[in-house]
Image 1 (spheres, rainbow, N blue to C red):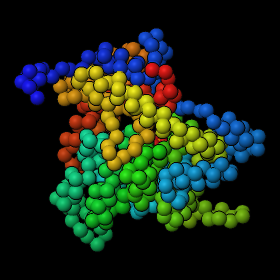
Image 2: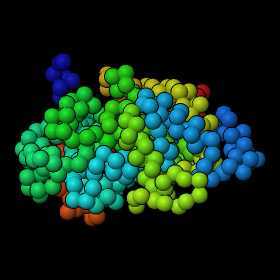
Image 3: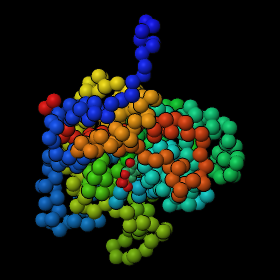
Image 4: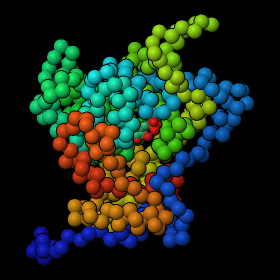
Length: 403
Ligand SMILES: Cc1ncc(COP(=O)(O)O)c(C=O)c1O
């Protein structure tokens, strides 16, 4: 590198160039309609399957689409069992419960996540303990977690405890941010060393892969979301997926009011939940799953278009999958270079004013007043991502607009 290059000032991003690059990537001209971050997309058998429910009257909590959906979600997640539930938050709550998380436990969750992740632990009377994220993956940082647990953990008969609070660590919850896999291999090693079960928050990563294995198959159990903003939707819905038949049976039981099977008697052997996914929603989900691989391909091609459109824009880059992952690119992410961090809100303003919906990532969970008192490790990586990341329009059909 010559001196001339070294002496060049670091340029900040020009918000108008971001607007132009997004338009180029998604193939719209200046007079385009408002472009949301993500819209549901229906192009297959959705009408037929939902009509079938209406025609036959099987619209509620029992029906053949529920079973079909459970089998197919499990297959798409690379595991043997699936339990369909009302939403991803409920799925996460029950996933934590079936691995044994309960009152007074601590659950290791990323500080950089959607609020449902720590909430699911709180519903069980457990305490979220916030872990740092790695800007290279956007997900939980296994190296830092390892060092942190060595420092604050102490082994006991019930498992690893936090020596400062005396509470047991009940689970580690890696979340595959915006469809990008956490570096799971070192995380699995840490979890195994300390005997802490992994519950994947795979809400955003249906269709993503880590070293050839599907996200959702990398821990003891995983939770998926089918909310309207996800890669596929059931309107609202979620699933618990696992290879463990006992965990799956327990999850099914708890999410169906813990009713003991009988032709007419109403007996319940635990405080269960009515978290069943209605047949109507499962029917929509069955049709959506048929399109999943094609949606992933279109999203991956949109990501490539973002990469090329932003190649010439100073001060910002497009986040790309790591060599170990094959992302579903649920939401595309821009990352501002350090000198451009102060322009983040100007970029958000210019893009939204131009009819292109963008938004920053979540406020760190540890900064929410509801979780201000929860334990947390130093969060430098998560703060770095929080300062730099901007989500851009990523709906499936944008991957096929003419450039
Ligand atoms: C990371 C993460 N976890 C959990 C959830 C909860 O899913 P749901 O909205 O279906 O309850 C979501 C999505 O909303 C999410 O993005």
